[in-house]
Image (cartoon, rainbow, N blue to C red; front, side):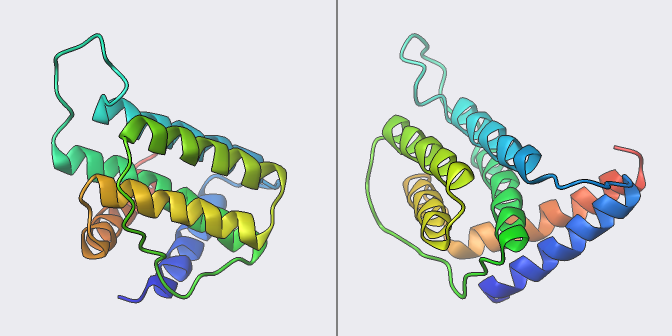
Length: 160
């Protein structure tokens, strides 16, 4: 699957959800907050900041699912503003995870305050760095997105 196709798949899911939930308002801010929450949930599952604990991170599958939860919202925000990327900006930058999550948070907040294509691309770059540091390939992400996308449709059909 091509990266650009994810934007269309997300557009279709968003349309389905909005019709199913009878959404009648602009939900950009809600999706922005949801993205920040999903990023925090991913950070929590990595446990990278929990210096007080000896428990390790969640299993890779859990981390990947949390990661693609964010991808859904990034795609959705891009669709809402007409920022559609042609290819995944895969960056191989080794960083401490805590720093990576803080950088991603700042980049998201910057985009939400200044909705430019440059800031949108910066957000994707930060997510690419997260993927690299969690050892997720583009194929891993695309496959996990497909699975979660199907799960999201099922959730809507079952009154989630």
